[in-house]
Length: 150
Image (cartoon, rainbow, N blue to C red; front, side):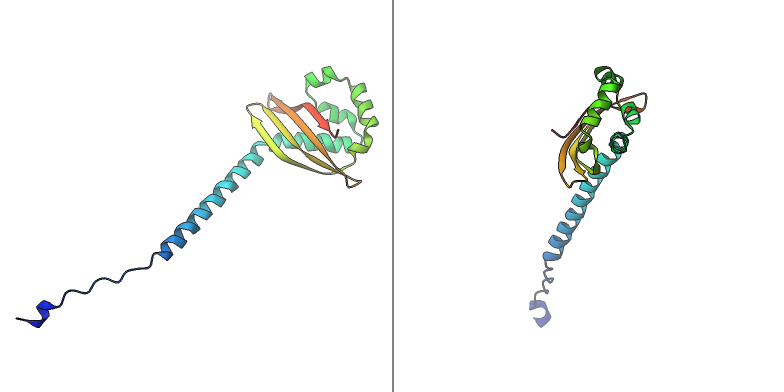
């Protein structure tokens, strides 16, 4: 009998599992962050044009250019509220038009309609709630409803 025949072969070393767990969790975290980033980018990209209409409207109101602000309104809204009524309402609530910042936490676009809600920060430091609804016709976004404060 040979002595080498009685020694069993060495078992392979068991590799630790933790590098696979850490690597998998790291990859899953990166994928999740990328997914959330893509969603936020998509929402902001889809809402960029109607958001620009709203910020232009608010900027026009802040400097007292009511005619330009009124042009951002849809035909339906202009039929509901004449320019004279619009201008009087803006003058009567001019303290709400001294806006230094706007934040829209809720944005949505569905087909040719968009809605935004958020808050406006006034020169006084006060924050007021605001909502806008818009419609797109022939590639142009127009405001169909707005609420500033109250």
